[in-house]
Image (cartoon, rainbow, N blue to C red):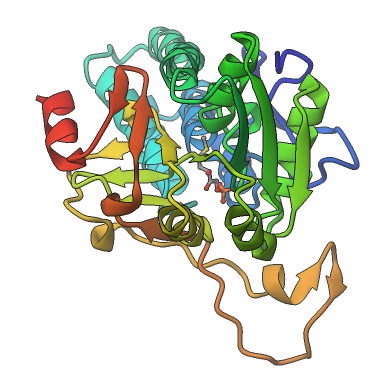
Length: 345
Ligand code: MRU
């Protein structure tokens, strides 16, 4: 499942990224050969989704050290410049900073020899990639048990193979449930304004032959009111220490609707997405993106010239609306602050 495409692949001296800006119409690949190329790809959403941007940044740092060798510059200096550049791309998903921190830790004990440093950092980036896939598989195994044998599941944004190194977080849980023989039908929120649901999630699910129905975000309420949804599951960009979850804009609305209609609302997130240094969701920085994402659809203007636009890319769902958080270490249930504390003890 999800074996028919690669979100990211490492070529030894270049990072290949499936260009998510043009899916599902075109399947093309961007080739990044230096950290600036990777930073641009993250900023412009060639690669997106919390775990995927962390993995991409790790390889961006490998490319930086490889480039330092060619330019005959001290690799530590080039590494730090690249780390600053990559960290400045997107502020909300903590996986980006987590991956940079892990690469920095690996770099700290390395010799001055650039060849040895590049080789060791390459191994670390490959380990981050492999561990992400393994975490997704483990989340799938834990989370699949939460879904009934026959269920209609609502999801928002894309938390699939495209948002990770492979398999996915929320879609990983769905994939695992389907593999276990459960009859799952997925309702896919289109996810305005960037359309990660319609362009990416629907594409992934259809490639895997998992039954799905696309809806616009505004249709979720009537679907829930009609009793047509058994559970909702989404990914996360950052989980605060108290269990508040930052995820794609519109997620909070889905969570409130689920509470009103007594439908469980699940979040799937690896440990690399949990940030216990942030006490509550109020402390999570929320990225605001270009107004053109709202005023234009696929390059076509759909709003008057000059209209003021508010375009936050994420919102925060308070912990009290979350039925459980699925991690690779198991399922966290309320009270979430205590469950998260225990996990990081
Ligand atoms: O702006 P995006 O597309 O990077 O936002 C992605 C999301 O909000 C995902 O739900 C989240 O990163 C989890 S991905 C496993």
